[in-house]
Length: 357
Image (cartoon, rainbow, N blue to C red; front, side, top):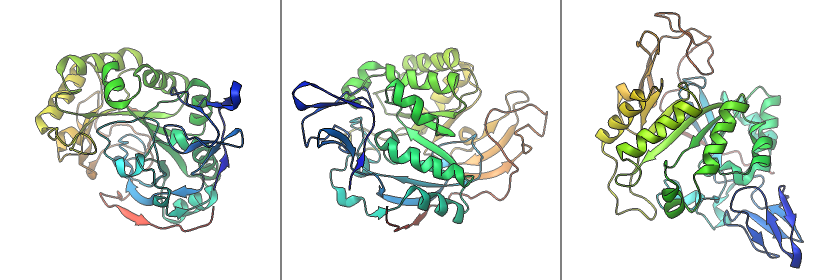
């Protein structure tokens, strides 16, 4: 099952080059890129995972994590297989590092996914678990089908993509959470097999040149990317280049994949990182993957009252009007909001679509 791929060009000697991401994979006939899902076949690029998923699940939108994108709503989440980075700490390695196509057990056309989201009462569809950049053609078609049904499209991505496909891909997205792995090119090169600058370029593009609602997540790994110096540099860059209103999530690492020798992130590290972000002038800094009501709640930048009280994915209090204005002082918060109803809560509901692609 293959689908014509985009963003490639022919090279001398019969090879082709993938122009989707900064890896610039050069492929002989039959070879796959590092992502594993983009392949040279018949002298052209094909996508081998179009219409196939590793599974579907209804989640709270806060799990993506997106705290300012229709809080309390549910989102239909799914991924495929493969990834264009090689993070040694991958928390979804069984999907993103998969080389077994039989993991892709559920099949669905873009129209079936949009219809399922509508039927399940989901505000949005999320491309997640592995990076949607590598199955961009499929994700973009799904986004179109979702928009036709009034459903939003969300990309959970590492942002490792070239400029031309980036413009086309994010033109289809309503929101994105970008995984900023660290604020060190050395970390990206040695631990992720990539570079930092393309990710910073993606973030600047999203915030400055699009209407895509953007949040950032950094998984803090003890001794690797959690020094005060690095965290201050990261938060300063965000404040100066993206502004104070881009939410930043510091999430807890747990030992996994090829970094089982590193301890889990202490809660104190997350609290310290959050304080560094707040001192740098960022309005919305969160802790994630832990029970921490203070670090999970949203505060009004004007009156400093808690306007969305959260413990992990559970919303215990909501004090914004349907436009996102603080009910205490009237200040407008950054984000995408609607009339708040009963929150979806911390549930995770696996679903099967089982529709032919």
